[in-house]
Length: 122
Image (cartoon, rainbow, N blue to C red; front, side, top):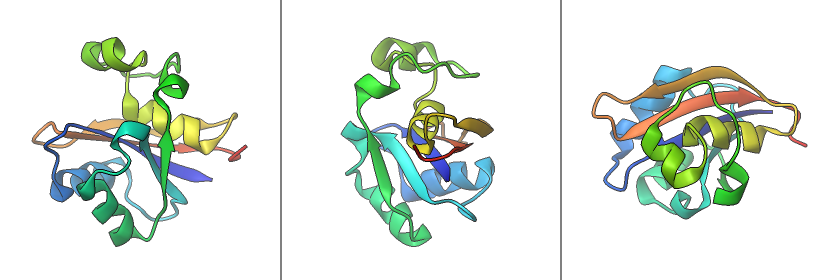
């Protein structure tokens, strides 16, 4: 199972989400898109999921907390208890033995991040 994790600000656009996903490796071979559960219904994310033909996996904030990530944002650490929502969501959604195959990349306007993890889905 290959999952793209996305983190983003409230004012994110479809173009910024798409840019981040493409920079992380693109939608080819993905089985899902994952993000924090409080952002899963955001319209630009839903548009991206439709465009890519992928389901959205909503990861509860308490599952994100404590997941070690290779990149770190102090703001994200303070709010979510992990260094990167994109990396943590990808890892959580890909399964217990997941590993990152693309670390967090940031859109040019800095409103979206994406990372990709591969795992067993369990």
